[in-house]
Image (cartoon, rainbow, N blue to C red; front, top):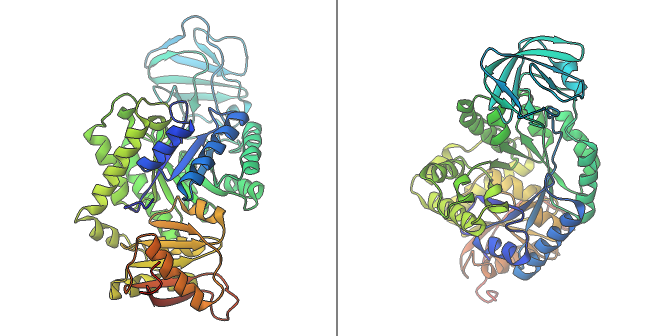
Length: 476
């Protein structure tokens, strides 16, 4: 199946969608990558859903990416007695390490690491930011805070600390076990939650050892302060607008979304926009106009992928949500303003041979009005560099490595085909033409631009560019 759009769609699987027949329907509706959320999966169900996706992949004959999203640390208050603590603006509340149930004027917070880092003036956001307090006095194992936005605090509500650089690693013991289970299955991407600094990503890369690509979820203000280093070391980033919108003023999130997308595109790293994109479709067969505009904005900005969370995992209309996202993306990419916006956001090529070849391929393909750019790759790097250019013509990626094709299913504009490696330069060009025809991207007599970033046993084949014709006799 050929996608007639560049942006990719990630659909989260859950109780509403994790059966093989629904996964197949989601793929047919437009899903390119499936997300498995370890906040809601044990290892037995991880294996079951992973196997179901691979079964669908075999049926459709197309590489499908699987993204496992690690839960990350969960910081919560302890038990609160009665119906909760009613807080009004100006009320004081003491947090401490005592595990006894909280009540009037006191709440247990069983996280020594929080008290080790808190300082006077820091904000405490509870229950997804619905309740807000400011620390007036931080001490050894306690903090006194004044309510700025009131509400009723009940047991086990989450707490966020936007001003506090916590001495907490991004991965818990549970995450490590989940990570190992995901790697044993051979998943394609692993997403890290609660990232504050580049070291968090480096730790995950050491564990993965190349067996899965690492996606860094940008959801904390501390990560924004270290964005350059995080983008450099991660394989991709996610604009995780849910938690980011809790820890930042909501009006700041759209600007950060644009900055994050542009930072990733400059680096040639995939970028995913996530959270509440079609939220109303959890319960409704149609989205709001604002949600459609939100999806369209991400597509116009050149994001590699847009993601559905509860809409496809637990909603009443998972297939309809994917179909709607697909329709919006196709409509945006067919809009007459889209080419100009995408071209205006292009970045200068980096000073490497691979980037120079990719930029040249784009230029040559435009000048010759080529039918497609065809990239041969083992690692996926050549495909990534081609996508960084955002050419508005098809990019066909040929690779002998199935894992590479699955990882690149996340990347803007790439149509991946698994095929045996080329024997020499003539085979490279001839087979590129035959596959471009077979996949519906070129007709006999049309020109294609072929690039390669792998040694083919022929001197000079690495980082090469060649213009080829789709042969009339080889159209089959």
